[in-house]
Amino acid sequence: MRWVVVIAASLEAAFMAVDGARALVVGDYFTPSSGEYEGQLGPWADLVGAVGIDPRSSAMKWFFVLFGLFWLAAIAGFCLRRPWSWWAMVAFAVGSLWYLVPGAVISVVVLALLLLPTLRSGYLG
Image 1 (cartoon, one colour):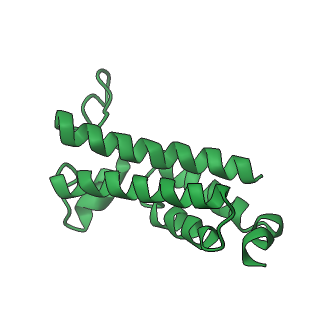
Image 2: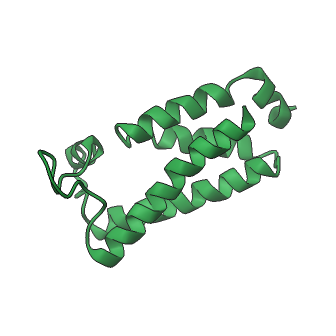
């Protein structure tokens, strides 16, 4: 189960870091290039906008990059079985629940697996 957590969390964290970096360099996040949702961000943008943050602002793009990179560091610690890493993984998974829809689904899966006694015991003693 540990590897499922590592793969799922890595996909989300890496995508956030890459998407934010791309947005900083190219000017925008990955968005659909055709169809009904062409050029639109996911539902997370509405949530972020509702609290007064421009989803396309430089600050939000940097947040994506840094959040993704720090989460990848926590994943590395988790792979190395560092005692602090279980808590960091839980914090990052909870912290990304706003990243609707795919990110929230991945985060819920990661959280559910992290809370299994077999995974907790390896880190919490």
